[in-house]
Image 1 (cartoon, rainbow, N blue to C red):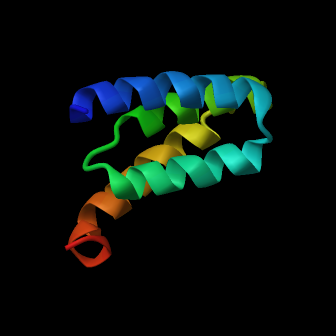
Image 2 (tube, rainbow, N blue to C red):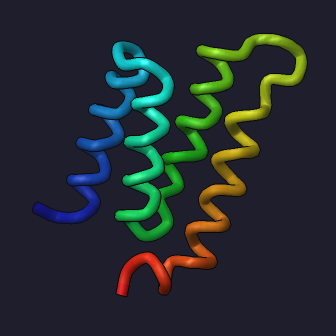
Length: 83
């Protein structure tokens, strides 16, 4: 299966998981996918979705900022995770 099709299917599955599974399990899945795929930018969308679902006040950018920082850290240390 092509990598782009796999990413699209996983995006749809994770989107459904966000509606059904607990938040901690979704975060574990997103951490794994961010390490597995190179530049998994979908994690930023799910960070924003996490803010919308679980936070809801004025300062609801916590998940978005954490997902951006995590994506940057994984991108910097990618050579040490996978070879």
